[in-house]
Image (cartoon, rainbow, N blue to C red; front, side, top):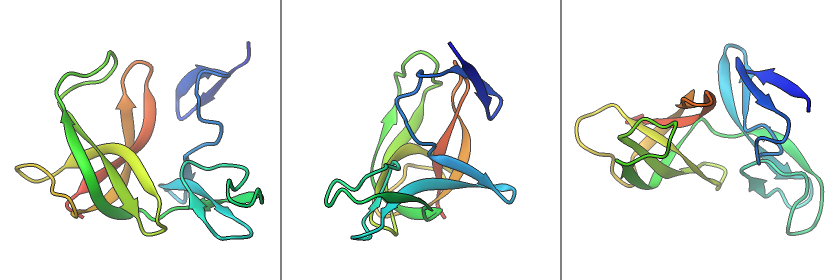
Length: 139
């Protein structure tokens, strides 16, 4: 079994169900990655190799670092490796894709549907330590 290290996290090959990286470090910051169909221009998240509409090849593309909160919920009882309470929600990005991610709210109270949020990257799971997208608001 081959083992690789990425972002200071050691994982065995095949431990992740994600075939394509969703985060890319660039010029001291992070980008959320998607894919764009070369024929119809549809953008996808998470990234994919082929467009399900026309079976054309998709190319990797960086997604918007901000979006609108579509829906959310507070998690008070979390699975092992996660530290509750925290928010998760769907964020609609400018490209028309919807992303499920952790939400970090910087104001008192709770988020509201339609709030603008921005991308941050942080450890989203402690065991094993895993980096992931987090959207914080208000933007």
